Amino acid sequence: MQKALILGGGLAGMAAALQLRKAGLQVELWESRSRLGGRAGSFVDQATGHTVDYCQHVGMGCCTHLLDFLNETKTLSAWRRHSTLHFYGPKGDHVPLKASQFLPPPLHLQKLLLGWPGLAIKQRIEVARAVHKLIRLEPTKELDRQSALEFLIQARQSPGTMERFWSTIIVSALGESLENVALGPMRKVIVEGFLASRSAYEVLIPEQPLRQLFGEKAARELQDRGIEIHTNRSVRRLVFEGERCVGAMSSHSDGVSQGDIVVLAIPWFHLHSLTNSETPESVRRVFEAAGELKASPITGVHLWWDRSWLEQPHAAIVGRLPQWVFRSPWLEEEAESLAWEKCAGKSHHYQVVISASRDLPRDTNKLVEMVVDELHELFPASREAKLLRSRVVTDPHSVFSVTPQSVQHRPAVDALLTSNRLALAGDWTVTGWPATMEGAIRSGNFAAHACCEFLDIAPPELPADLPYSWLAQRLIRQSFSP
Image 1 (cartoon, one colour):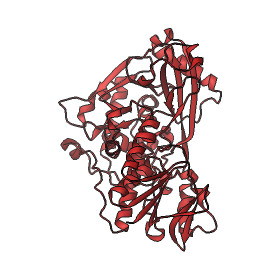
Image 2 (cartoon, rainbow, N blue to C red):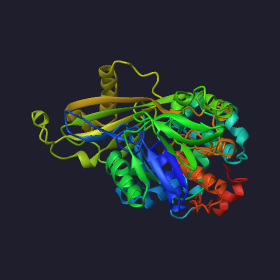
Image 3 (tube, helix red, strand yellow):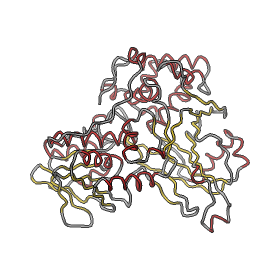
Image 4 (spheres, rainbow, N blue to C red):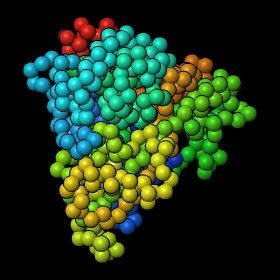
């Protein structure tokens, strides 16, 4: 039995391990943290005893590789699918949006345009014109080198339309401000995330902490399938015999763990730590290029209140500092901490998500004050609630920035496979997707598939993308191929 060594236990590494094990390989998986899941994880708030996610993660109906991974790891039942999206305008007007049962895609989401809050009739016409141009673009890789903002300017989108429509969608979906985004990822979100298939736009929200779903349940399923998992084991250096990568050394051992194939699934900003005098030049070039990717931060503002004030499970907010608000229903229970009981018998946790958050105040108290003031303006019921506790969590490397320049720095998963017997995985590789859970899992699946072909082993079948509707196929020239 041939052996695969997977370095990195985030979603990309977990997906690669699962696929390679299904192909019949012996698999050893390393993760530097105490649990698998990588950035899709949670922390325990010491004051409340609550386990909350670092930042809210959601999936969409178009995320077929994510859905397949959740099903394979027996965690899909813990994610609730929402077919109604709850939008709130700048003045707090609630607009629930749901697809038509009768109109075919892309017409099924006409209410998205007709009901979008905060837009005048003229602005809705602007959006329709730009969407028509966008959906007719041939989805070539050249779009990844073009500016989304320049496209919108050429499509005669007014500043108000960009702020209240395009920025609301793009910043939330891509984690980057509109002026920095490439045209290809924007088309990906609008066309494949909303217009091409009926259920693509639906949102999947976890109903349990991510550390339980990925770090415990999914990890246990991988172990049950025979995958050897080592947590608290980080990579100190890769081991090469000539050009070929034959294994790795960990930070707490001088021994070498070997593999017939090695999959490197660590974040792009850690690659530089693995280069040394013994690193082949071909590997060094790829690592240095990937290290040039820029990062975009995402901030989660965690708020505990003495009562519930949002009836809906989520709120997508247009034209305000808070971009999304999520309830955490599993935390709406009496806390066991004695210190917390002095504050309240019951607490209700909400998370406010702010993507592309590099310009936020560094003073967390000031930021919380700004967020709470806007929530009071948008949701009158929140004015009657008492804020018990707050905590701000910002990941400066939450996602890589999908700029027009990023395409030249993203390597293919098999860029080093033939010459160095080293596969790459991570949402920063070429997947056809931006930095999302779907992109990470696709990268792991693609890397495993490439490894199987390299080793002349039959690879497992990969999930298919959602099919385009007949009308969407006529409107769209061809689907994107990574």
